[in-house]
Amino acid sequence: MSTYTATAVLDMHEPLMDAENRLQPLRRDPPAGDVRGKLIVVLASGPEDGGTRATLALCAAVAGLCLEQDVEVFLIGDGAYWAYEGRTDGIHRNGFPALETLMENLLDLGGEIHVCSACDQVCGIPDEATADPPRRRPEIQPRGLAAVLVNLAAGASMTF
Image (cartoon, rainbow, N blue to C red; front, side):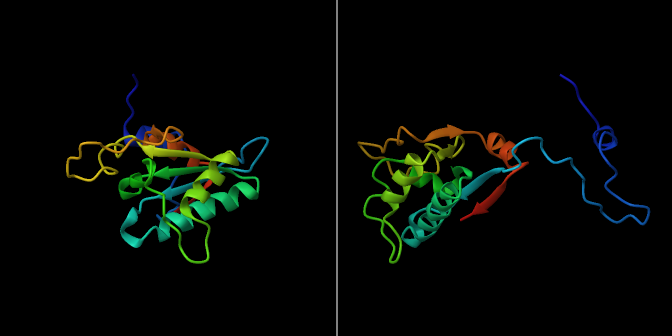
């Protein structure tokens, strides 16, 4: 395993500061081939707003899929709540499709939904012990935050 000092890592890239010590943007060559990046929709909100942010997040994700974008929804923090069976049932905000319908459409159109591996079974399940704990939906798999960050390099993100 190699280790690098901060100076060595910075020396491998363009200078971050100009002659007047002003920050300069890093210039990267555009990716070869398809320049369309992945849209990452980060949902960090649970049921505290009646599902409004979850509805908006899934609407944005489905819209991205309809525009032929690759889309991944990442459930993190309180947003991990939505990864479990039955949690989207009965959530229907005025003027929008029901949350369960949006989730089904997202998956049917080829979108991906992941839950933060550190939040799975921690943030999404209430503290009180229940005889029958909720089960994660089988189509939603845990994924580390680093795996999502890699996709952001050439894509875009929205957070709800």
